[in-house]
Image (cartoon, rainbow, N blue to C red; front, side):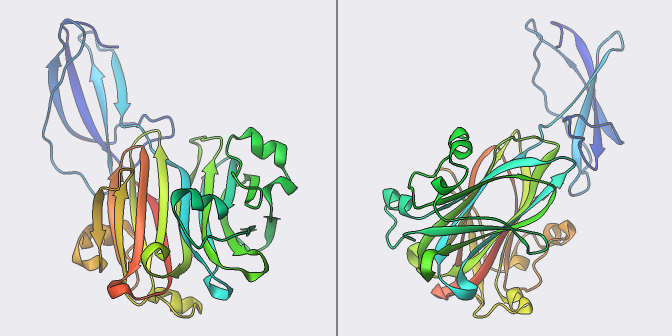
Length: 331
């Protein structure tokens, strides 16, 4: 805590990363500013320094007249919830969601597959009876569920996030770090609009969601691909990608030839849009190491505060096909 009417020296450092505590050791000195607090111990100020490298974070050290120091930095953000709503078909066009858990400990997460509940939000043609499978990075089946009350009912209820409809699916699982895939199908090969969600139940910052993706068939109107994520605990810098042509390399048929993408906030306000990724942010996207392989694919790098962000993927000129939307946490 700062003292009233006291002058402090604020030194700023560029850092390649911020440690999990939220405080970073100063690595590269970039400048300082002397500031004096008011009678309440507060001060507002601005300062200009040389530009730092893409992806670096800024940390600061405040030193009082007696030489006491205090380090601080921007809070670390993380992904707390991911979701994707789209038309669930059959074969190669079911709803496939992937995610990566990084860190050094296990994480408790809840997966849900919703269908009937979507009618409450004006969605028509919903998936009447979704089923859910969880696979690990090797493709092995970890768990599956049809109706969420069939298994784990008490544990799922205790999370406060039980599906509203008995025909909807849910899996509560303790995940070790690694790659996972959730697959949503309609029971007996039925089709319709479904929603897959993953909730971080424990929110431990030492283990976090670092990459999420969803693959499905992109149609038109209400059947476009809608992916969302909720971040918490501070700001996050992410790259969001919409891929189509690249999927043909993985034997996915009928790919979306030219995806377009919009990012919107919780109020539906447009944050950014992109058709071909090289049109905007090309240098920054290339520097991230996550540039889409095909020039017709879309990508946006954005810094978001805690809250909801939605990605909407369409085919250019209302084209349709299988596509993938991805979100990667960046430094």
